[in-house]
Amino acid sequence: MEQGGALGSFERRITPNALGHPLTAFVTAQVNQHRLAEVSEALAGIAEVVEVFGLSDETDLLVRVVAADADDLYRIAGQILAIPGIERTTTALAMRELVPPCLTPLLLRRAEGR
Picture 1 (cartoon, one colour):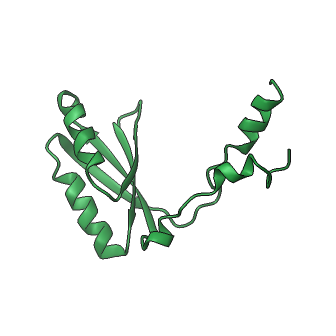
Picture 2 (tube, rainbow, N blue to C red; picture 1 turned 30 degrees about the horizontal axis):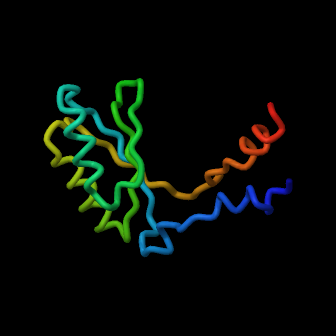
C-alpha cells in the first residue's frame, strides 16, 4: 500500500500552527518524585502542554509545549515552573521540525507480518 493511501490518512493531523500556536518548545523539568502524580495532573491542565514524557535521566520530564509567540512561551514556562513539585526547568525552542511524526512504516511492517 502506498504512503498516500489509506494508511497515510492516519497521519493527517491538525497542527498547532493552524490553531495560532506556531512556536514549539521543549521544557525539561526536575521534579520532586513524591509529587509526580500531582505534577502530571497539573501539566495536563495546561492547554498548551501537548505531550509529557517521563525520562530515565537526571531530567525527570520532557514537556512539549506550543505557544503563540515568545511572550506566550514565557507565560507558559512560568506556569510550569510554578507547579508545586517542579524544582527546576529549562526551555529549548524548537527551530524547525525535521522529521514529522510518521507511523506509516510501522503500520506497513505490521500489515506485512513483520
